[in-house]
Length: 447
Image (cartoon, rainbow, N blue to C red):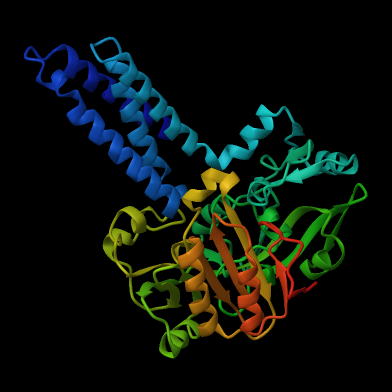
């Protein structure tokens, strides 16, 4: 259906270009072509930037729409009097947008370009055989990009190892290559969702468990709700708890994941911006069920979600895992909205930042600590840091851990480690799925 709609849009775009350049006798449309083409390109670019920075995975249909229009009009104009340099610019622009659309498959594309040996097994037996010979399982491969690491040459992708295996209402068992988008789509049929989960729909559940990914839940994080996993060890499979996996089997391949799910209840989500941050704001942060505090060089943004009995507006009643309504419809620009918990997992967080396209210049690292952190001194020190080095950081906290994540074009500076030391941090660990550093003095590693 989507392919048909895009084909129809492309055909209409082609006809628009042909009609405008060939059938109007006074050539008003033709002579003023750039009055349409240039604004169209600008709008396309702005929508693309906004989508990648704020809601990339949810905006794909809209970006495709604009891309098809640009391509259609561009093709229609070839041979109709436009200078060849303008034709080349428009075509390159269109292909650039298509490249952006493929960024979630960027790793797979890079593997193919580099001719790395990989397979896409679809059975447990195939996976165990590949693992036994030393091949490395890859879910989406984002960690290699974020960590600036060279991917191993002998890998296998879990793309075809996906789907729901069993469902007992309060928990489901899925294959490790299943994406959160596909799982949530299945859960939507029975009005259920996760208690906590990573904010990216394209991540696989096996990859999330492997790197101990998390969301924004204030009591505990994603791995706390993983009831059981099945792993492959020495060409055999065995069921273990997630704590056993992190303690002894982190190099083993995850085959299936059993995770707890709950009713998809209504949530009141807020985005509150502040120039200053004091004890009153901190009290709001500490008492929200879901919470994240974003810090940049100009201020602070508190993103929260709490349970509510309020009903969604009519225009938002169809909100599902795509979350299109929030970013492009009824709640755009608003600081408060009511939605389902499945959407709140995504809406209370930024999604993939624009910098991810420029991986060589981008650093995303996250540090976690069990110690009691002085939040207010920390965030004011981080604000001064971001004024100097740019980028932003966000703070997430549950009953056991405090997480500080950085998104910046600068690598880890000694001043960050000094800031953490001054606010009471002595031991940290890095998120293993993001950029990791070996030297962290005066701090020590917590294992």
